[in-house]
Structures are given as structure tokens and as C-alpha cells.
Image (cartoon, rainbow, N blue to C red; front, side):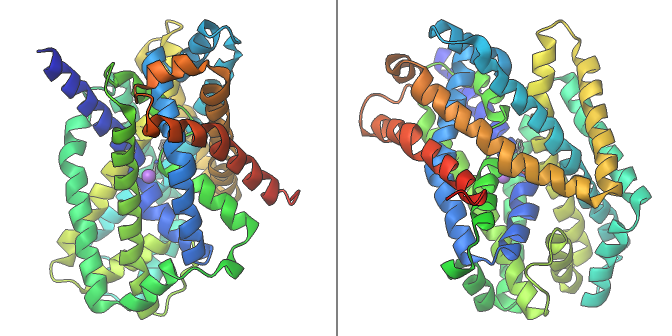
Amino acid sequence: MTTNVTWKSRWTFILAATGSAVGLGNIWKFPYITGEYGGGAFVLVYLGCILLIGIPVMIAEIMVGRSGRSDPVHSMSKMGKSAGKSGNWGAVGAIGILAGLMIMMFYSVVAGWALDYVAQSISGSYYQASTASIEQNFSQLLNNPSEQLLWHSIFCLITGSIVAVGVTNGIGKSVDILMPILFGFLLLLLGYSWFNGDFSAGLHFMFDTDFSKLTSEAVLVAMGHAFFTLSLGMGAIMAYGAYFPGKASIGKTVLTIAALDTVIALVAGMAMFPLVFANDLTPGQGPGLMFVTLPIAFSNMVGGQFFGTIFFALVSIAALSSSISLIEPGVAWLEKYGIKRPISTFSFTGLAWLGGIACIYYGEVFDALDYLTANIMLPLGGLMIAIFVGRALPRNTVTEEVGMGSGILFKSWWFVLRYFAPIGIILVFLNSLKLI
Ligand code: PHE
Ligand code: NA
């Protein structure tokens, strides 16, 4: 009985955390920023940040969530106090809640684009169309605020309804089935690119490392994206850490989640760039990359209308399992003050909805929110979490709570968390401020 329960909650955690991690960050954002920041060298820095900053911080976040068994604010202040330190560490959780709200503002707009493309796929608007008119389809959407508003509102409404009911039972099971199907579709697109795209140009672009193209801005964006894609630095994974069973080791689970997230991003990129080069598109065309390259594939594929519909629906669902984790920490926090779940969900999602409207009408708001959250707030939150676990908490508490034994696995995590991750984050910040 006991083992069964443990297994079940570990599984719940894996589903929730993978659902949060895998989203628009992998399929929409990673390919387009890779295109904007010149490919190979950017990808390498991103992979390095996943390994040496993301993974250690994720272990730390889960550990805090599992020990605190509460929302990020209360988990951190409780742990801080019981270690004889300040309860003010809860502020890190509060900033994270704000970051989640700010991310939701533009995330729900992009998720709305994905929903719009479900409709476009059904109506066949891009089927057997020319590359030029496929490009035009996307710019038409960008120039049509009311159409964006419609889908943005629908997406916020769905997210809110799920969070209002409670996340634990909501979409866990469907994610379990749908994520492997999404991955299957990405492989299908990869196969299409292999046969019909300029596959070798795509791979060279993604994996040839030319460090002369690497600006300090690119390094900051690569690090920021490592946090964004793994849902780190804002308490989402910490909040889900409360589902993590008592004794199970955190390390292996984290490696699985990070590996899945990374593979999905890389496959998405490898499916898109060969089409970019075969169709004389520019890799650095920005946020429209996915909405232009993939319809090109579907438009020429037998059954492309059907496949396109399913694919964009799956992307929307992946976005949904991420968006609920953007809202959940804030709602859980307000619940502690006796505010009813539907009311706090309604307020939070309502704010995000308003912010999204600003994003739709003012591109600068969209860009500013994206930049501020991914490149500044999440790494800063991650830095604070690394310092909290690596330096504020006593080593024996951490050894006990993280449950990774005291061997080489623990020791290397402890070293990276105490030295490499914080110093790395600070150096990237200083570098982008042109101070070093
Ligand atoms: N990780 C999600 C993605 O890649 C985005 C996200 C960021 C979700 C932060 C929750 C918290 O799409
Ligand atoms: Na991700």
C-alpha cells in the first residue's frame, strides 16, 4: 500500500512538472531565439546553462517545496525561520508569483495564436498555399487585435477554469497521453524536414559553434531561457514539489525532466530550420518562426490539414499545462489567507488577461514583459534560491531534506549549487551590463 502511494505521488509530480516545463518555451520560443541569436554557439551556451545552472536549481526548488509543503512564499519563510534565519526569504516566493503573472500576460497571447492556428488548419487557410501567403497569414493575425483578443480570452478562460477547480486532478492524466503524441508529431515534422528541407543547412546552423557571433546579450538570453524552459526561478516547480514523496531521491527525476524538455526543444528546432533554409526564409524572423515554417510542412503534406489541426491543438494543450503552473503558486498563496480558490483564480487570471490585452495592442509591452521575466526576474529568483539552499540553510538540513545520500552525486550538486550556479548567474548579469 505505502509503496503504491509513494509511486503514485512521484508520478503525479513528474506529470505536473513535465507539463509545466514542456510548452511554448520549447516549440515556439527556443527555435525563434536560436534563429535570432545566430544558432550553434547560442545553443551550446543554453545547454551549458541547463546542465550547470538549471538542473542544480531545480533540485533545490523541489527540495524546498517538499520540505515546506506549502506555496513558495510560505515554504521559503518557514524553512528560513526554522533554520534560525529570516522569514523574509518568503519575499523570493512573492517576486516569483509576480513573475508568473507577468509571464502569463504574454504567454496566453502566444497560446492564443496557437488556438487561432487550430482554426486556420481546420479551415485550410494555409493548405497548399505559397510560402508568401503562409507568411502573410501570420502577419495578418498580428495585425488583427480582435482576432488575437478572442483566442487570448478563450485561453485565459480555460486556464482559469482548471486552476479554479484545483490542479492536482485536472489535466494530469491527459498530459500523460498527449505529450508523447506531441513528441510523435515533432518527429513526423522532423522526418518531413529531413526529406523536403535543407537538412544539413539546418543542422549546421543549430550546431556549428561560431563564438564570434555570440554577444553578451545572447548569453543572457540563453541563460534566461534555461530558466524559462524548465519553469524555474518563480516557484512553479517549488509549488509542485509539495507532491514529491518523502524519501524519493530528487536527482534522477530532475535529470529525466530536464532531458525531456531539452530533447523536445532540440527536435522542434531541427524540424524548423531545414525548412527555413529550403524556403529562403530568414532564421532570425522572430516570433512568427513556428507559425510560418510548420504550416509550410503541413501545407505540402498528404493529410496536412488534419495533421496541422492536431498539432496546433497539442501545442495549445502543452501551453495549457504550463499556464496553470504560472497561476497556481499565486492562487495557493492567497488560499493561505482564506481567500477562496475561485475568487483568487478569477482575480489572477483577470489581471493576466488585462496584461495580455496590453501585449496585443502594444508590441513593446509584449517584448518588455518577455525580457524582464525571462532574462532578469527568473535568473534573479534562481540566484536567490541557490543562495538560500546552498548558503543560508545548514548543510545537514539540506543533506537530509534532499535525500541524495552523501556520495558523489550529492557532493557535485552541492558544489555546483554553492559555487558554479550563483557565480555563473552573477557573471552573466555583470557581463550584460557591460561591467565586465
Ligand atoms: N516552461 C514553460 C515553457 O517552456 C514556461 C513556464 C515558465 C512555465 C515559467 C511556468 C513557469 O513553455
Ligand atoms: Na520548456
